Length: 349
Ligand SMILES: Cc1cc2nc3c(=O)[nH]c(=O)nc-3n(C[C@H](O)[C@H](O)[C@H](O)COP(=O)(O)OP(=O)(O)OC[C@H]3O[C@@H](n4cnc5c(N)ncnc54)[C@H](O)[C@@H]3O)c2cc1C
Ligand code: SF4
Image (tube, rainbow, N blue to C red; front, top):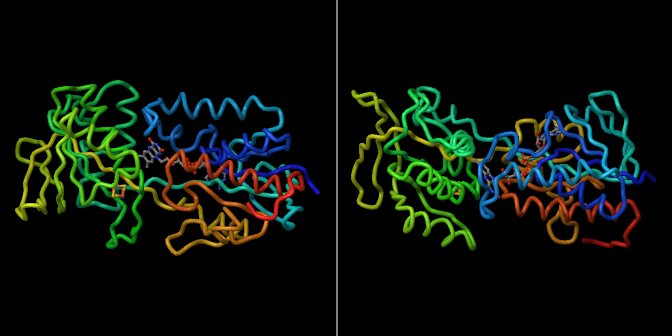
């Protein structure tokens, strides 16, 4: 029986799984399709993470460094699994780089795809340069300056629109992306820190700063940083005669139409299923749930099982997820996979 676990995807989930497996003395082959490790927080250049406040490049960088320094982990970048043969305990994976890997178990940490705001054209992305996404603002914060892309001026008024590509049945995205309310309230504070004179408005359906994030982000953003929260339905973003952006919609608390000038409009984009999931499902022989995320086998006694024996799935591959939970999923999957190699006497996790 091979003493190796194949981990696919080197985001927070896959990095955590790889470190967990190596920590109990088993071998890992980590396969990542990009040429850098770290997943979305590194590839998309996130700034300070919620809830820790640590810079993504430091926090996730530590996770990358730990795996890279471990001789039990073999890393293949710019690679995917092209073909999978065998069964639980005896898988053979052929990589796109021509390598063949024997593995006793497989972990899928293949993550998500950011919602493409082009699919919400009425909110101006792709039409107006000063309509941007949260990932673009994260990159501005990381670079230390908030600016309107059209002319580089510091914005006087910034609107953050929540639930862009989430909770939107019209475009087939029924799920809540879970973390974007917290990320947005945090971004509002970061904008204010960089530019104290800028007014930041958050337009929302509901605020879902879940668990302990309520006071640390929602109330703090409102009370200490004066972020203005407006419960509204936004109909469209257009351009005013003076060249600024105009936000049009309805304030749903007072039930009145609103037309508000803004310098910068930010889409709080949600988490879509990985665009490659149909292909991943085919290669690995695992199922998809109805929205297109990878499916679970069973929740309670076969934890983090996919629909195929010996293959585990966790993190944002399963649905919108935050980093702390993704790291926990990775460790739980490491335990399951090592158990499959016969190293631990497990009945069920
Ligand atoms: C705008 C925004 C900001 C966010 N900020 C925070 C935050 O501050 N704090 C927080 O807790 N969460 C945050 N999140 C959520 C966070 O991004 C996810 O929780 C986290 O990235 C999930 O980790 P993952 O490893 O499951 O997936 P990913 O980060 O998506 O990593 C998946 C990895 O798998 C690779 N991959 C994909 N397909 C294949 C394949 N076929 N073969 C090989 N490799 C593959 C990808 O290239 C990637 O490296 C944010 C999300 C968004 C949208
Ligand atoms: S977390 Fe907030 S912004 Fe994100 S989808 Fe859920 S309600 Fe909308």
